Image (cartoon, rainbow, N blue to C red; front, top):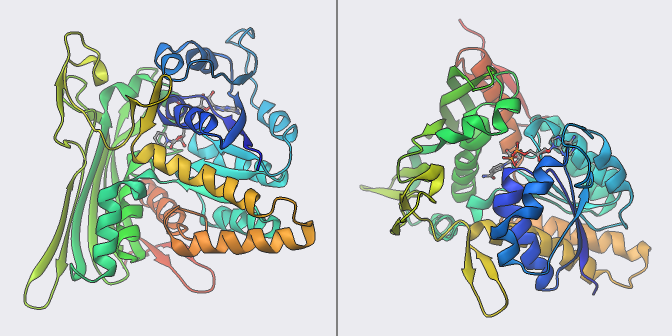
Length: 421
Ligand SMILES: NC(=O)c1ccc[n+]([C@@H]2O[C@H](COP(=O)([O-])OP(=O)(O)OC[C@H]3O[C@@H](n4cnc5c(N)ncnc54)[C@H](O)[C@@H]3O)[C@@H](O)[C@H]2O)c1
C-alpha cells in the first residue's frame, strides 16, 4: 500500500506545535508520502521551515509551501487552498488547521475534491453544517476525523472504560477548567478571536464538554455561557473569559471556566482540570483529573519555558519531542496519538480497498467509516455532533448575556433560546 499525500491548510500555532511534527513522524514511519502546507501568506510557512526545533527532530524532511516562501509576506492568498486541494490525487488527506469560522468551507472543498479529512476542533460552528459534512463524506466513502485529542489521553480512556463498567455510578455534578496563557492575546488570535466569532468556551471549553460526553455517553441538553470582554493589543474586542454551564440529559450539571489569561510567569503552561461526581447506591463515586500538573517540574537556566518562564510544570502526556531509536526526535503523547489515529484510519481505509473495483470499494469504505463512528474513539461528525450543538447554543447564549439555550434532539436536532417567562 502506498503512503498517502497530506495537505495541511493553515500554518499557525497548532500546525507548529502538533500537526506538522506528528505528520513528519508518520511520514518517516511509512504512512505519509508528500506533505504540502498552504497558509494565508508566507509568514507562518517561513516560521515552520526555519524552525530549528522541527528540523533537528526531523532531519532531511520538508514540505512544499503555498504560497512559496519567496512571496512577500504582505501578499494574501485566501483562495489558494482551493487550487492546492484541486491538484491532489483522489482519496489522500486534507488537514484543516485554520481559524474555526473557515473549517466548513475548507472541509467541504476537500470532500468535493474526494479527499479524506482531519479537522482540528471544533469541526464547524453550526450543527446543520456538521450534518452536511457527514452526509457528503459518507456518500463518497470519505473519512472525516476531528482532532479532539483529549479523548486519547490515557486518563480519559481509563475513565471511559470504568464508566462503561458502571464503576462510578450516575454522573451528577462536575467542574472543568481550561485557562490558556496570557501571551495568546498577542498572537494571531487577536485577528480572529473577536466577540462576534468565538469565545474561550467555544475555543477550549468544548474539549471538556466533549470529554464528559465521551466518558459518560450523556448528551448535553442545555447550555448557558457568560463572558467577560476585553481588548487585544491590536484594539480588537474579544471575550477573554467565560463561565459556562451545561446540563446533560440525565439532569447532571457541568460547569466550565475558560480564559486567555493564565499568567505567563506561572508554571503553566496553562491550567486545566476535570472533576466529576457520581451518585451510587448509598455512596458516591468520583473522577478527578489534574490535567496541568502531571508530576514533572523543570527549572531551566534560561527562560525557555512557556511564556518565557524558568520554572515549568511539564506534561509528558500531551505532546513532547523525545529521543528514539531513529534519527532526530519523535513526538510522543496523546496529541500525536490522536493525529496518528485519524491519519492511519484514512490509510487503513485505502489499504482495505487497494485494487478493489470502485463498485465494491465504496461499500467497503462506508462500512469502515460506520465502524469508526460506532467505536466512538476518534471523533467523527456522526459521533461528536453534540459538540456542534453545544457550540451553536453557546454562541447564542453568550451573545444574549448568558441566557439559557436548549438543545432539542429528535428528528432534526436544533438549539433554541429559552423564552423568558
Ligand atoms: N487544543 C486544540 O485542539 C487546538 C489547539 C489550538 C488550535 N486549535 C484549532 O486550530 C485552528 C487554528 O488555530 P491556530 O492556533 O493554529 O491559529 P493561528 O491563528 O495560529 O493560525 C491560523 C492559520 O490559518 C491560516 N489561514 C487563515 N486563512 C487562510 C486561508 N484562507 N487559506 C489558508 N490558510 C489560512 C493562517 O495563515 C494561519 O497560518 C483553530 O480552529 C483552533 O480552534 C485546536
